[in-house]
Length: 345
Image 1 (cartoon, rainbow, N blue to C red):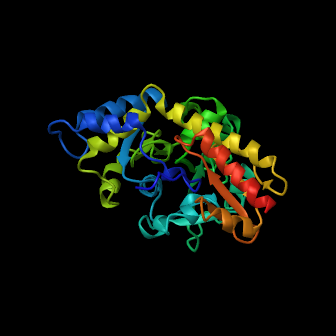
Image 2: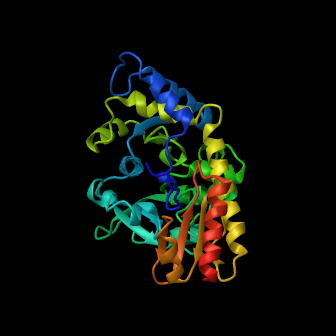
Image 3: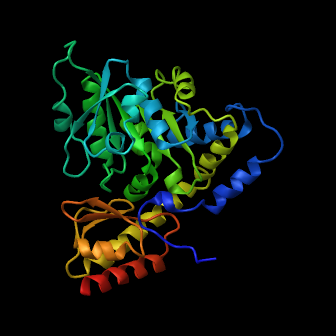
């Protein structure tokens, strides 16, 4: 048997955190009522209220695409649209699911750093009431963004206030919400509930779960439709206790924070190491667990024979390196040494 290999392509490549695996095993005892009427899901509800506030409702789902689709569909009527960054995951990495499954129009905005601003949102604040144009209803943001950047608490508050002043709702794609909170040194509710976010797609898979995400509703007016939308979107788990147990484990004894803080620290270690290599250009600030850099294409090709990572932009040669909860300092140092060797070859 070959030795386990290590990659920097995605935090989805990492395995299951032992505490999450133990939680699944504990849940695997006896029978439990199906479809969410079980003790594990009830425990998760309590933990979510602890972390996001007493009004928070949680709806576990299978994956991040499902969480985004269900959340956005609950916030829009069929003729309405969602404003998002051009680089947003809902726009470029979900196979058109928001359009195909939810029937939603995406109104995209180019951004330099993956972050929306009130001014960028205003680009689409036009033609209200025009029957020929999909009507804007929701703004969705990603925290941390697809470019590894994180909104500050003040930025989020300003953005939420502006979104609501336009009569729109604010959805947060939190596939890496834990990494953003760890980077900012804040609690989960400080960058969601307290700043005025209406609904969150809460990520667990990238933070040590086997496969568990959730829609968390913070605006009480949205929760009524989600059970029906979740079922029709094929995101209702019959044996939900095993999905809920994973999320509950992450929200217990700050496992979410421990995992995210470690991944972020490994990204900072990698950033520091590659900045010292002549010819490697780090392109973006490292707010969470992603490092973006430009390498010569030939170097990228050679490195990818032994290490898996994504080429982010084929035109510029920009690549993305992701660190995860189980990335070790030795992993980072070995990878940085390989980059240095190839750059000098």
